[in-house]
Length: 199
Image (cartoon, rainbow, N blue to C red; front, side, top):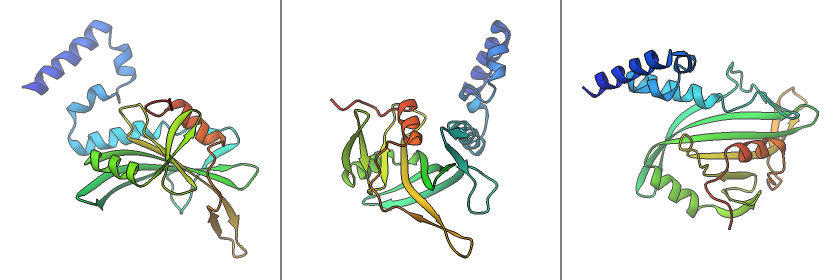
């Protein structure tokens, strides 16, 4: 019954508005209720993938691990004290074009027991300030924050460098403390800022 009402409302919107705006954005969340859960999840992932620009300043998304996908998508569950937390993580590696700096960007949506996950983040990180916002650090090379957007539960960046090995492979180094001063972290914190400023 609810689905029939929603379909009727969508049809009315299309008729009244001429359908131009809504149809142009047919992957909008307004249509999600018409699909089964697995298709809803795919639609969500496609929307989040568009949050990763191809280039940010002198950094560009790098395809790694022999994959064709520039953005890695993982669904995983983890046992935390007293809870099983599940989340969808989308990760992109940005590499500096004329240097060896890298920044991984991880956008997460918690699909099971959000409260337990947020509690774990707060209890196992130390607070820091970036651009006058409170951010969290789980490890020295990582910066995480909880964005104000209700479509994303957390964003993290990991700063490091890559080194070419003699055999043609590469290794990563995360020895330095993440500063958040790089253009990639700055882009994401400005466009998807934390919930509240550091007052």
